[in-house]
Image (tube, rainbow, N blue to C red; front, side, top):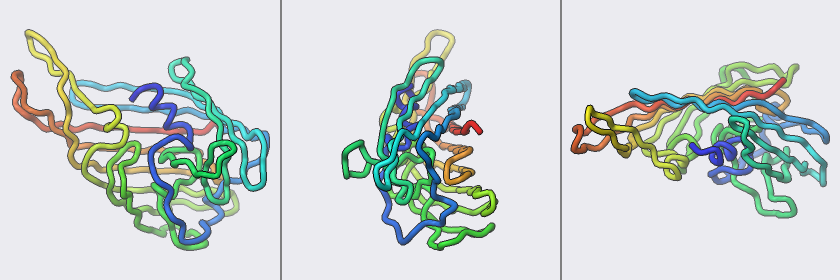
Length: 256
């Protein structure tokens, strides 16, 4: 994934996806309590592993609530990876609908899967006004998302404290095919022999993922998504076709 791609992970308003229809108000513990002047900062780690190769990319992000117009808050943000700026962004965000807009626009922007707030596209709709520990629901992902394919998943409430305005959710899901980021940046591996080496494309098959997210006051305190991909390297002059496993771990942590 490129630095630009990583910056899109960080900003909740700049990623693939389509806003899902809501069946009714979400539980209040899932909605953010924002205030002008509030700063949201933290770090992101992306770890990828495959046969014979591994890498980790780390970055930091910082967002600030600059002002308010009606129900929308003006939020500006920036990110850095390896000490290099990944760009600055600004949106108008409505915490009641969890929808972001370009400043001055009435058209909603796509939602990120791993952003700063609850994302109904990825975590689904509990279809109840209150949550309880052990509660489960199903969610369908009709399109590729940042780190995985279209598919389905099950979500479970693991921890809940209404007094602390905190909740932890877990999700397990599966699908077939490449993720949105893999469509934009097709994965490849280096094939080496005693004489030479070359890059080979990777065909993505079934993917499974697990995710865990903790919200405090409706803002993501920690989010981890682990994706395991069954892939195949096509046959070449150097080697026959073979199956490999790709593992990607995405961790978003907010500074207390």
